[in-house]
Image (cartoon, rainbow, N blue to C red; front, side, top):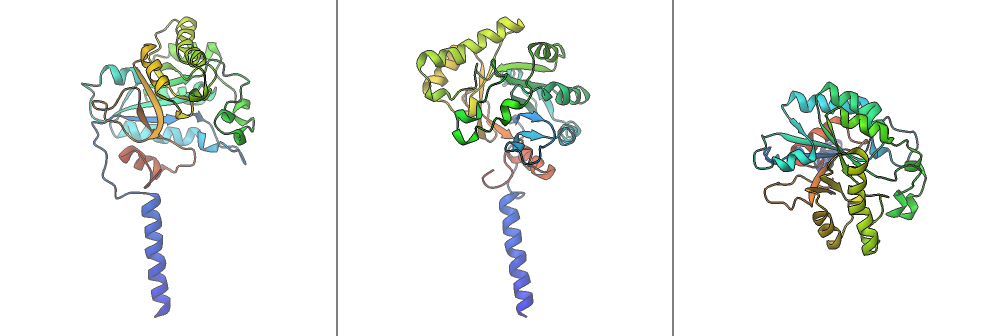
Length: 275
């Protein structure tokens, strides 16, 4: 009898664990609320690397795109989402990439073309040979992200020519905005917009806060600079008609997620109770 009791207890605990880790029971966020997906790299994981959560494999990325296309999700850039927010169809979705990694063109673009999916890339202007992960936590200064190949300006132009990619700003240096002086904030937020517009002969409408960190001065500066929208790293799904367009949540797509976790995140904005 004790064996059966132990087995039942084990199954109850196992069920509780998976119900916490994978909140399958949570009600779906209404599909009239657009989903904004946050990616960084589309590349295979590196054994022992610190930032593998930022690496979604090309195989998994294709599986995710196929799922979205097969389930009638419609792809938009961030600026398109905002300019059409009052007439968006159900199941509207935006794919975003932070920083400007080279695999965004070598691995992601062919798949975006295959599934006719649009994306917004938040570009760091001075992205080459720069270690920014330590700007948030000094212990992150491993050099791993600095060593990752970044997009060249010519590759950015090629992405723009595809007609599928919007370029937004991720500041000049990917610094920690709340720690900066007023002049430095201006250079990072306003200066990056001007550099993107001058370099690529486009209008830059979209912004993303580095590390998701900002204060009220940053928020005001992003708006006054002429951006139409800005994304954070706060996990969730925003109601565009009620949310400040400069405080938009995103659905984090981790390289450590399995496919079931991805589908849950599309449904509710997060995999489990907290993540």
